[in-house]
Amino acid sequence: MNPTALTVLVIMSIAIGVTALVLAIAALRRTAHPAPAAHHFAAATIDGVHQAPKEAAGPPAVVLNPSKNADWDELKRIFTQTAREVGLKDPLFLETTVADPGTGPARQALEAGASVVVAAGGDGTVRAVAAALAGTGTPMGLLPLGTGNLFARNLDLPLNDQREMIKIALTGRERRVDMGWVRTELLTDTEEEVALESGVAESVQDEEDLEEHGVKQSPPEREHVFLVIAGIGFDANMVAGTDDQLKSRIGWMAYIVASLKHIHGRRIDATVTIGDSHRGYSVKARTIMIANCGKLPVGVTLLPDAQFDDGWLDIMAVDTRGGLVGWVSLVGKIVLQGVGIRSETDAASRIDYRRGRTVTIHTAQPEAVQVDGDLVGLSTTMHTRIQPGGLVVRTA
Image (cartoon, rainbow, N blue to C red; front, side):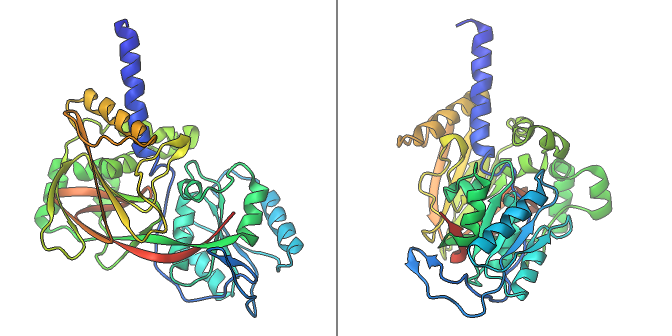
């Protein structure tokens, strides 16, 4: 093989490997908290068990993200027509905003007694709506309109048939799924200085944002929901470094471009504590991801054991060594595990798998934290927990 062909092969291998990592968080967004209880959809099924009709079932509600490139007039018409055909009231349509990506409208829907709340947008809209529905028993339907739609993919929904998706959202089988929650600790003054001096803060915030708001952090009392994957390190840096305009032009490939800026970045030193154990284990990695589910597009399985209804969080620490060789090695591991062959460690790369219901990660330096592709901020401590069966979703 000539040098040019070899170079192309290596670059393609790196791109595939990085893609397998970033697809899990590409095109996802937003956050929030639980909300008060509301009614179930009448005459539905939960986990395959038929439910008796509920009294005073309200109208279906659709929380839509108007920034998505969609024919909203046509979609509203299909929603209304489908609701009438199955004997439901005409839907309520509520829009998200930049300031409120879906949690507020979903809470409005609950207050109106909605029988189901449909998230019409990308995974960020789904996550924001899910935050409002957590623990209420009110089902969530999905109309995926993002570039990744990873949660919808893990539910095996028919992404290419919008009419069928709308029918499932309004009349589908109901299934309980787990929810992950993340909160972080504030940095000390010394840690903030380290974040600024090391360039970590500048890697996730532009200069104007830093000057106006300081280092991005999340209050320790605030929890952020995730349905797919949360992470600290490489994946969070990639999310923060993705150009929104480029993303609007080329979709999830923009995450690949951003990730290439960080493949030679420093590794993180961390201590991971699972459950109530008072003794954590040390990890040196490019990134540490905590997953609720692990299936990606094009048949790639990032975390083979992750299931969204098993009551567990799956932890994946990824490390590479030797520059390009390490990333090529990682490609092979991810591809092979998709066909049932797991090779976790060699000289060039390592994938460490663990499981837990609560996970705390402490890092030696401030690191970026993300949930489902949304940057939480910088921290040295990330607390994660699972809420088993916290959300009811409509599926085929």
